[in-house]
Image 1 (cartoon, rainbow, N blue to C red):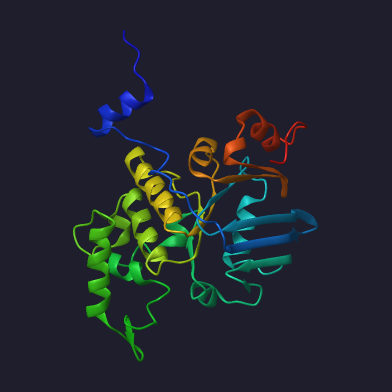
Image 2: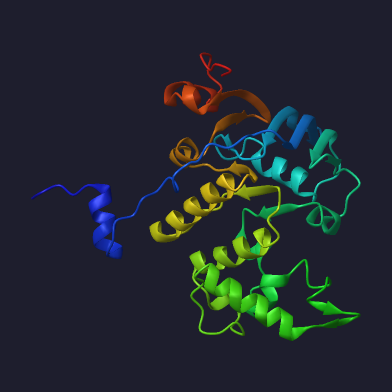
Length: 283
């Protein structure tokens, strides 16, 4: 029997060629630092979970965090997204220290957050799509007037994003639970980037998605980068990081084992850093 390549199998499954790795990458200036983690440390029950993490992200680049699951990535996401405050060190987003910021204040600081678990953290599944598209900004004009929701504006915003993001849904009144994983993720992408934030945290953004939805997310991330947004991409998929990122940091046992720039990406070296083996180089 004739062997079938991965790309041929994908084409047979969804009826067209799929190109992973994102859209064409444009040259960007990378002038403005939009994210800085400086000597971030976190302990729980006497265990060091993060130990002196230093990471920077500039506008117009995708910076990845690679590593085997369970090496501090989830805890780092908790810190930089604002849900964990008992850390030492500094986290600066768009020139503001987030330590004393509420989640609401962080959202208003030109930041988007695509969480690890879209169903538990990113959506209220029983709520309709239009509500989910404005979560976190529902109290702001034009979506609110005094203490009342402005459904006309909410629905106008929702219809536009359903069209722009090609969200496949029978109605904006349908519960988010009725959407496929890919369409649920599109709702989160639309909501978290509607205001063109300067900095976006993308935590496992393609986890559990089919190949067509993965292609969409990859293209979206690269286009956001091309539009001069800074993106921090946390993923356990090394191929994804290698194809999308301008720089990659490797996290091992809560520490940064090293980092490499795109022109220096070396699978063997990154793999060694992920496993904590000697031979990993700082690029």
